[in-house]
Amino acid sequence: MRHSARLFLTIPISLAFITANSFAQTIKLSVDLTDAPRNIFHERLIIPVKPGPNTFVYPKWIPGNHRPTGPIQNLVGLHIRAGGKDLDWQRDLVDMYAFTLTVPGCSCAPAIAGSKVCRSRLAR
Image (cartoon, rainbow, N blue to C red; front, side, top):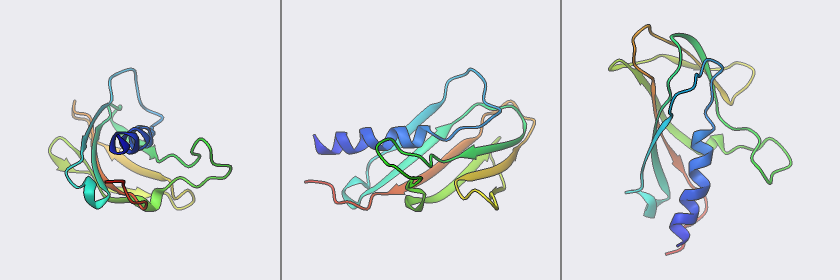
C-alpha cells in the first residue's frame, strides 16, 4: 500500500514537464519500479511537441510547499531522444528547472527518460 502511495506522489511530478510548443495530443508515461526497493524510480515520457526550439520545465512549486523547492536534485540520468538519436539539451543559465533543446523536423515525439532517487525510505 505504501509503495502505491509513493508512486502516486511521484507520477504527477513526472508529468509536470511542460513545453510551450505542446499541442493537444497524448503524453505517454511509463514507470519502471524494479529498483523501488533501492528508492529509485525509472521513468520515460513521450511528449508530442512541434519541431524546433523547445523548453521543458521541471516543477518548481509543489503543492503543499510554500517556496520553490521542487526536488530537481533527485532527477538523475536525463536522456532525451527523438528519431532514434540523442538530442543535445542544455540547462537554462537562469532557471535551473528549465531545459532547452531543439527538436528535429521528424514526425516523432521526443522521449524523455530519467530516474528519480527518493530520499525517504519506503516502508517494507
